[in-house]
Amino acid sequence: MGANDMIIWTPLASGIYSKKSVYFEAANAEPITTPKLQRVGALPLREILQRRGLLADTVTCSHCGEAETAAHVFLHCRFTKRIWKALLLSNPTDPDTLDSFKQATANSGMICLPPSGVIQPSNHLRSPTAIDQEAVICQTDGAWKPKNGDMDFGWIFLDSTGQTLEQGSSTEPYVASALMAETITIREALLQARMLHYSKICIRSDNHVLIKALNSKQRPVEIYGLTLDIETLSSQQFFFIPRSLNNSAD
Ligand SMILES: [Zn+2]
Image 1 (tube, rainbow, N blue to C red):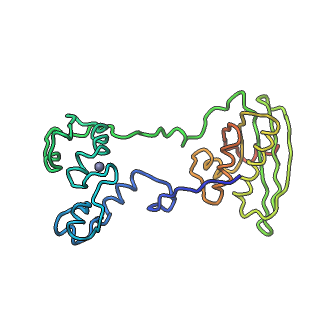
Image 2 (image 1 turned 135 degrees about the vertical axis):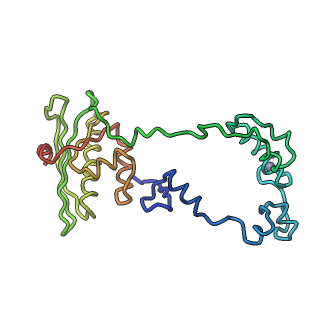
Image 3 (image 1 turned 180 degrees about the vertical axis):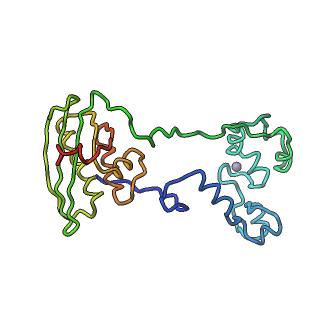
């Protein structure tokens, strides 16, 4: 089904962004200016770079085309003004009334009010707690043979009273792992559900790792494309059930 490219947060092995890791990175980061520029205490603005012969021609701001001076970048560029306007300051400041960035930072009334930025609700990290009564229940199970990569898998659709609606099974060669086998099983079951016009599906699997991955959207690289496929197939909830309760799908 063609998964998209994946954005990975390289400072962490998991590849998943966290605010904590940003603070750690910032605390340990190398200065972004060169040693020479640090000595003269200047930022590599185009105006300064050109004065030192480091830039041959263009000395203008990439946002508006005016000369890229410190006052322009931090105060007077139309792009910068939008940022000033959006800042939650205890004493809102009009950058046009300021002549230099030094003057801006010396302005005693500039206290940044919390909360700044949008906080993402973390509900998607929690497992659903209640089964949607209108959903068709789907139990899946896959058996994978490490020796040759063959897998056998099955699925069963049940209504809310536990009556069997449909069931099926299939096989697939050359599967890389047990986790991949379980994920393929769920995708196959959802493809069947689509053909049967089931719009809401409640998936039950005894693979804890997979259910956790599907609920948290923290996709292991190994099954990244498959989990994206699963996400695009109808509306689903994912629940873990103990192996002892998953016999019907075997
Ligand atoms: Zn500008």
